[in-house]
Length: 276
Image 1 (cartoon, rainbow, N blue to C red):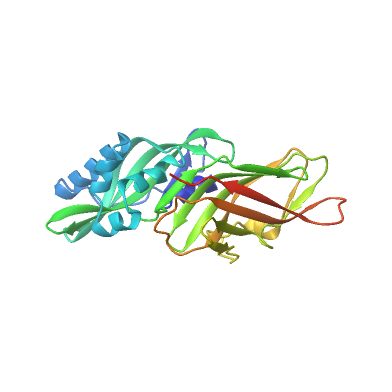
Image 2: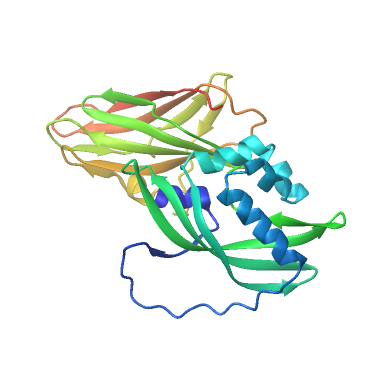
């Protein structure tokens, strides 16, 4: 679930469908007004549900449209995770005519990159409505400004690394990776040692190794020991300013890794095709 939540960001997940979580107190939201603000929220949700991303993009605030850059980049954030809005209902709202936050209960279909299978999740999503230039616009923050799915892979010394997705944020690039041990004995993966991301224009992006576990993958940070025929999907973040053009070829070097019984560690380099 971690990889999808990073893409969807502002989701407040309530329950996995089919699971039976312990009962929780229902959050208290304000009433939903019957006004123009509510109408804009519903138009936005209808556009997302129908995959009319151009229409949804046009409803965003000026800052949000500038953030994504284009309707195509906005659309890419949903496509990278195979997101489909199955249903949406407004559960409540808070605010006034100067600005209102709506709490939307959504059922979302998506591809979990950990198992490459489709799943569904139910979540409460906050969506803002603000007046701007004489009209009402949507504030839907927290997402990367661009993303693309990938199947780039490499295999060294029985350790396979597959890049599943790349997310672009204003201050970093997140890379979702599956490590698979196809060898005959244990292998330890320590990517926070010497991993680096490069592009074909000379850009070099260093790994972010903070103890902010929303950005740093704690299990990979501490070292991942993989048994034979096991795998782990996580993400690595690399420091980067916002890129005006992300359509470039990427080279991701992952190091070090150490095979049990081997004398020396090794590294893997994955060549990632450019995003559209």
